[in-house]
Length: 327
View 1 (cartoon, rainbow, N blue to C red):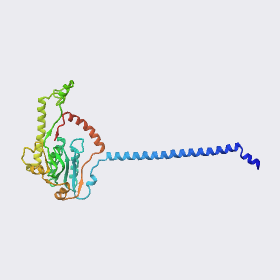
View 2: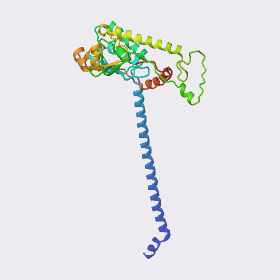
View 3: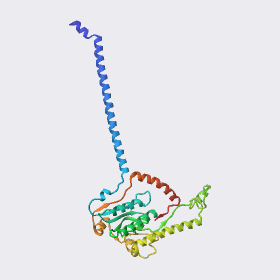
View 4: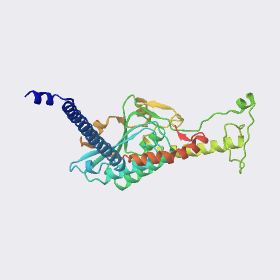
């Protein structure tokens, strides 16, 4: 018994026992590290899949146009609403292509009993406004029984009013701002500033008027007269369109086409608009169908981004010419 006790407690046996305990502990640590790596890898895969799913979702939203095909086919009679908000210009949400697509889609729907153009815009491009104006006038001739109304909220001036004047009737709030029938080109002149700082202007052109309205060159009287004629021509087109759209409702006053603006109350008196009313009022009381459906066409995100990129080059030239806009 004594010999066995001595033999059991020998250094060799203790070393083996210690070695087994260390190995077991090491194995546990290794397995724990491996398990932790596996968990980390699984969570990593999960988050990667989640990220890819999110990106695919965003891509889908970007590719798919937010268009009211499904909403428009509700099977119920409705008043179509098209929002024209913000600046009217190519590359902006309120551009002629989007507005015309919205109008055509609303008119095509057999359940549409009337169309409201909800307007809250300071105006913008005379060309874009003219495109929409022509489309409204064409639609009114083709479908005389389907009325198109403009409902102005805060503001509808310049190119916005250009469009509104083509509708059957215009409704406003008493505090709405209406008018600004005019055209503007503005800019700055830095000729004296250059002289003051001793800066020499070096300009080369291949045409005698290629540097038209250059802000760093002295005023050229001939070019100024030419640009004023251009503005007058665009202004007259604007005036003719408003007179055609509003007809005898428009009061004879030289101030109407001077670029001034008026409140909704004053604009009713001047014949610029017809009556007071909101979207809800026009749908319920004028169209006779209270249910409203939004037919506003919204471009895809990718198209908006590419459109803004392309439009930036066009705007660069417009800025160079001091921006001819209806204001």
